[in-house]
Amino acid sequence: MLIAGSVSIAFPLVAHAQPSAESEISCDAPEALQHALITIPAGGRIIVRSGTCIGNFVLSRDIRIQGSGLDQVTLRAADPAQPVVTVPRGITATISGVTIAGGRVGVLVIGRSSLAFTMVSENLSGGIEVRDSGTLEADKLRVSRNKGPGLTVTKAEAVIRGGLINHNFSNGEGGAGVLVVGGRVALTETQIEENDAKRC
Image (cartoon, rainbow, N blue to C red; front, side, top):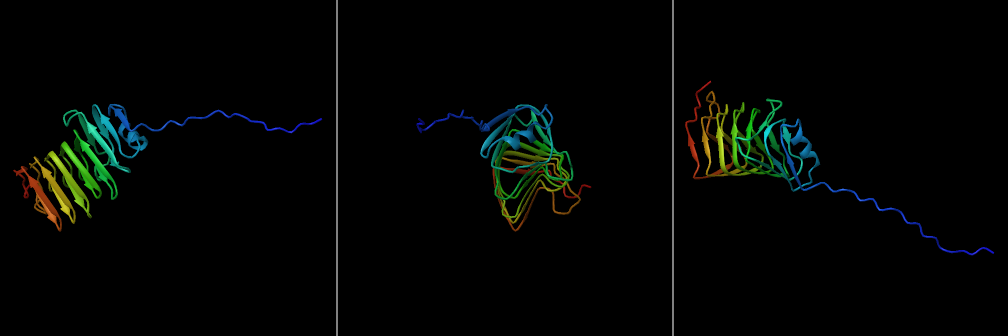
């Protein structure tokens, strides 16, 4: 005699690890920052302890990049014809405690960006460019020794508090300190000095 009954089969549960919302790296390891930017979830924080991170970093999600200090961590362009860091439209990024150098500009902001305790230096066509409805807020920012305007704001907005924009230079096209074209800049306790718009 056959007896029909129900049979239960237990399947093991597979736990999928979620990416951590915080990553700690050293840029002494090649492409450490690029890898962290790919793997960290939106809204996460990357702590950079030391070293020079080489690359042109286009931020694809909301992110915080926290360096150990502008004398400890440098973000340097791999391709000097491109920005070192790009914040695209729709992205919100916070960057602190780093030096940004060696690109066409140090930071290109089309989305929303906050900079703090950061140096932007030795870029080839300007320090920071904010354009196309982008917004920048910066505290204790130094923009120095860039070829081109230290800060360019084109149809966008920037707020700089406690900053220093100095020793930027150009051939006279567009100035060397702050250039505003159809945008708005608010400066609080910020020094703009010794920029040279005639130096070749």
